[in-house]
Image (cartoon, rainbow, N blue to C red):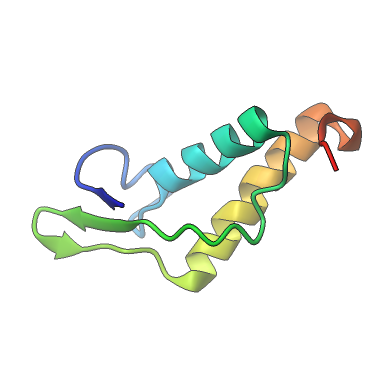
Length: 79
């Protein structure tokens, strides 16, 4: 879905703050890894397409997973 407001710059000028936050929430709520999740949001900010690249999405998914895994351990996840 399109996101037109919010934290596009939290992780630097390339954007992704909202997506990173959503990835952490996904893991916390589902107790499943977000790595490989196919959802691809598109971002429009002040008329500019700031949609994240596949590489950026993979980086953010892995960062979120590492954070939750480090904080809660492997036993947190449901198989």
